[in-house]
Image 1 (cartoon, rainbow over the protein chains, first blue to last red):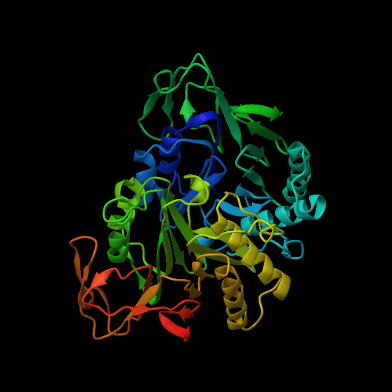
Image 2 (tube, one colour):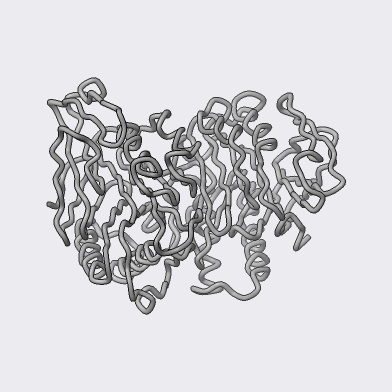
Length: 258
Length: 258
């Protein structure tokens, strides 16, 4: 299995603190040594850092931990391979362009009996993971339903994606994070939780390594920052745990669809 | 205008030496301070590092110069903005997936009177540069001609792309680099040159900064490495300069279509 991390915020915020905790699970406190990746949206643009090496010993992960890239939407993933070999093309997150937006996706879990379903039309997997194939299948379904232009109401699209995710959950374990750079959707199959931090901010201590952050010093009173993770990353904070089949949609750190 | 850099090699090769020269042109020896980007293919996978900051003072460019990522195909670009503001979404190279391959593209030049041509069908620009719109137009034309599956002979696709590039050249300046991760195509409008290095290897000195490399120490006798650039990067070597409308296709460092 793998571990997911994501963020939605109303001001550009760095994810150094949370990523530091996640990266430890890539070889130190966790067994997820088969690569890692992180996507930062900055405006409509995005950039993804990936490495097929364990996050705990990656030069590039070291850069991410030391160089605070400020972003409103972040998606990250550390991998323990089950389907597909260890290689760059099998490393999450995956990105595709649709409707002039970059869509970014990461998956935790494993699917079975998907070969006849994931045939690939417009969107095709580059690697050989069930995860990327599932992403391409979702994107193909979205285009088939909504066509070549984005509908005015994007919530309709995410409600449709939730029905697709539920269909995939029937094939195994499907915890998913998906974003168009503005919205952040999370879908839970068995392991996903989130926390929304806003004033008054307090301190938090990472579970996986000996780091404490005082959010009060790092934030302004109007900041709203939601962090999503497979398992809670901090002690002394109350994380919201999602149930099987539950999903949420965030925008600028706030819950849009509960 | 901007500067382009690319590489095609028959063994995974690092581009640290050439990128070091290029990066100097991003603020030190050249005026290209509006961001930079570099894409490395590793197998079918690829990863792109981008920054909207000048390459000569970017933390991430520093990483690329010090951490040798070995790759068979590399595309890089440093930008001096003419169309489109300075932002991450306007930073080259641009990537789209087609036929289960990542296609990566960078452009040097400027186009005019393209609004009615670049309407966007399946592929749409995320940013607002003429460069990205031209890329999406090319990809749309390729799909329209060849459909949803790659033809057996990819050379036919590149020959078609060359006719499209020639059509774009009529709208202004269009120096282009395009790759599917295996082939590397270069199209010249006014400024593009390349050099193929193979045994016996010699020494080369960068024009833009005081660095000398002895390729003999860095390579094995069977290595074939082609480097493409807007202007020659080294002294004491003979670069091949392309003429207006000329294009080349490389695979594993060797010229496929001259």
